[in-house]
Image (tube, rainbow, N blue to C red; front, side, top):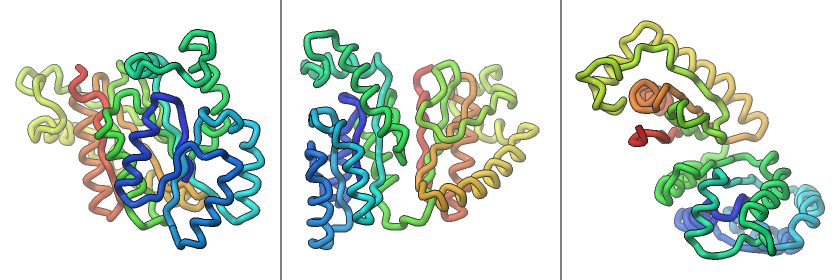
Length: 279
């Protein structure tokens, strides 16, 4: 596996999480040595190898095409995990760390961030799993890494069901985005307003509205078809984002119910409520 992405997006947290679940980790490896490390891992019968690649290795970009070509010739097709975050979050984290951006040079911090995004665009496009860490803390990111790579079943689609609020923006790392604003909003019921979709009262209300049951059933059928296609194409991860206005009531309740049904079908499923508590 190749772990890459923006400085400040959580590469170290992801790397630590992988080590915790048994992956052998190599950090800041020159790309020219990647094929040798993979061969050594094979000889040692090490089946889980994760390599962190980023712009600290300045020759990284020139070696990238050759690196993937050499891996392909050796019969190795790495999974790519790409971590990113919004400019605002990256700036805040970089300033908090009090370290210059590796591509900043004599310019502004944003100059370095923009150069890094441009340089990593090819890797992001090829990534098997993109994780936007803008609204994740270290524990939530570790949980997502554990969910995606902690198991041993490589032939099953692993699903993250994410609730969100459209007023806070659409998740940029979602594979599917669904809108449940067609359902009545519990916000307008005084007894339900202070509660969330995690409460039984709100969940029962949302799921009993016309169209809710049909929506979840059709979504489950659609994911079955899409999931089979993803597996055929070598994609093992899918993030399904379900949104309402604020991410508090409808999307949270529907996400929980959808995840419950996926688990009942034996599908490895994780739930993330991106905007719960932000309202």
